[in-house]
Image (cartoon, rainbow, N blue to C red; front, side, top):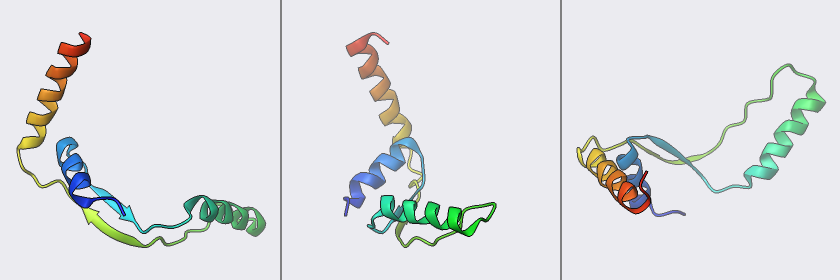
Length: 81
């Protein structure tokens, strides 16, 4: 499981929300879903539930824009862009 503190901080810095799915074999599940779709002959792929272990929202704090500004300044200083 990934550290939620790091993920939460990153999401706040970019002001995004995220849904964290439970660990699973998603490649195999996706292949099975596609196979079921082809074999079923339906117009749309079947909908399969996934287990969610966490949902995060940006904290609404004002430090995200400050982090982005500092990152932009460091990038311009280092690379000139």
